[in-house]
Image 1 (cartoon, helix red, strand yellow):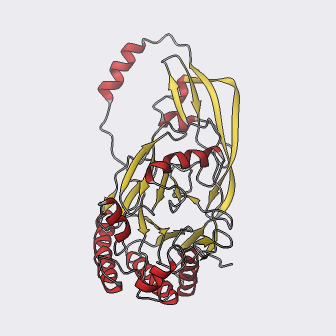
Image 2: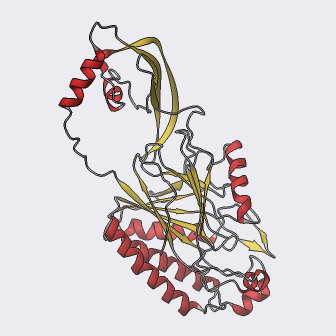
Length: 385
């Protein structure tokens, strides 16, 4: 196994964990974030919540919750503390003190901007496919345009991290569905498809790496890339050309000393979760999307995955491909009480004549990206380049 390639660990948090402070002016409750080591006191946490620790007294007992969290490729134990508190008795005139404090208030200086991670949804290239938008030459021209637009976005937003997500169907393959049709219409052999798909992804990553060195590559299995015979999957879910392409790029990266990180699902899983900033705030889930027959069914599939404690159970944002058009769905809630989002990526392929003729609808190719900001909730803004 490569040093920089390993299955993604499952990320779990306590069911009722929601850090924050509730205070009615006299009494309140507090739940801290997870700490790796026991803090000396909670003064800094209370100050961040706008309270004066000197005027607060903690009411025993202090309860704790512990869980494991992935950090820099290792599992660490985190501990959250929950306690009640009250304002210390005082003979001071509180309204007068509040008025004096307001008069002394100085303008707040903004700190440094939070770290940003640019998420790139590299989806449904289906390299080797020939359809109504053209052939391999057409695909190469389309990818070149997307690369230039992507570079402009990276230079504009200056992200500290880049998460490159191969959502699947990177190659067309020959045996995933209608083998005679694929054999008749494809203009590349399976070896050529895999070679070109590897080249395009690696080339794109090298170009964005000029502006951000912290890069993570995620790949999952998909229906076009699965090892199949007569349209039926053979072997493990990770016996997949897309996952194989990720491993080849990991080898190239390791030999070149790029320092990029690579994650793929556990051998018998079709999805994975990635803790973007290593703090449990933004958990990015990835699946291809072929697990459901239509896009409207993906939300229910995700809910069932959560009930079954599958890899994406705690994802705050789930991304997928397969359905060839951009769709953003607001769902459920996180442990913080904020919205989860389901993002369907647009296609980059040469078209789906079968679907167009059957439904009368079409999808415009594009490359979807979005930005996750450290300690700031994602609100569903997605760019289509």
